[in-house]
Length: 312
Image (tube, rainbow, N blue to C red; front, top):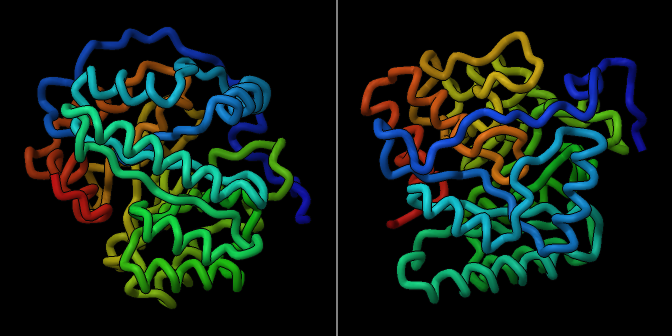
């Protein structure tokens, strides 16, 4: 296992970071409409409890310690139009359980008339675990619409053979892959070093090798914002989401200017509920940019429809 090197991540400076008491509104900003949130975490209750404890100690104090049902009801009640839900398996042997949980929840929400067709669920797997590809194929065949992985938690290298198998499977099924593969937000509590496993140059190697793969890197590729800005200009198979990157919360000194980025490859994502500030903080930041209506529509709606093949 690769050990943490001497390079400090943002979150290794002072942890936990504070929970903010910024004001929250009851609905999406008026200038935004049809918003699709492409970055929402759900877990079974015991998993959520473990996640909260970890964040309280090593990340930030989570403001919304909600169950899955509370998350969905909360966001829909505030005007979010469509939700993309995902999980990640932190160890081998639990992926099928998590995928079944996702499928059960989607079916449950689809049985509620006002929620029907408004949720997209992704599968997960622990790269390299026994029968990893069978686990994903089963999830795809049952209706999950892509894959979510987290390199920091799962400690895989983007250029490993285990990942090559997953890239090929997603390409075969024409389903998207979301990987937390930026080096940040990091933590000294991870059992591997994101600066060894991740890096924009590795993502670029994947994009070159799998040109038909639809790949999204969350957090705008934090902290290599310039590198990822350049890559979405050069690769049509790469998307980025905005989660936490434009909220002026994390101690970063190079907040990305999404108004200067390729607007048809940026998607709004909140990281809800694992955030330390108001649920709409990022939406307010987007609205304050005074982007053109076309750019706002792409970032908040159209790009997500294209990436996740959302029909509604």
